[in-house]
Figure 1 (cartoon, rainbow, N blue to C red):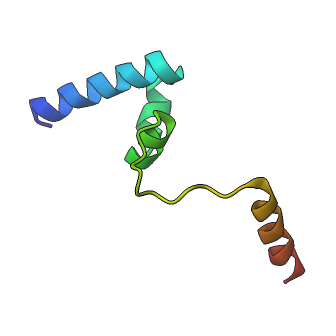
Figure 2 (cartoon, rainbow, N blue to C red):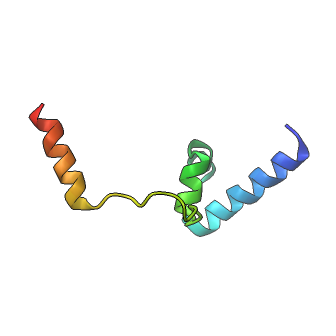
Figure 3 (tube, rainbow, N blue to C red):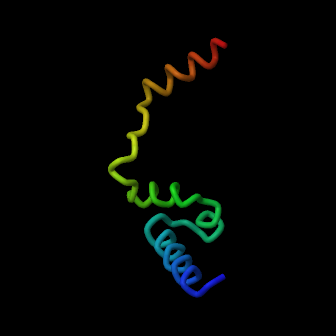
Length: 65
C-alpha cells in the first residue's frame, strides 16, 4: 500500500466517522459510490433515486410474477 492511498483512506475514514458516525468496519464495507452518496457528493449527472410510489409499483409487479 502506498503512502498516498494510506493517507487518503485515513482522511476519508475520519471524515466518515465525524460526519456519518461510521466506525471503521462500516467505512471499509462501503463502496466508493456509497460513501460519496452518504456524504452528499453524488455528481449532478447521476440519475435521481426512485420515490416510494414507484418502488411499491415495482414490488407489486415483481410479486405478481
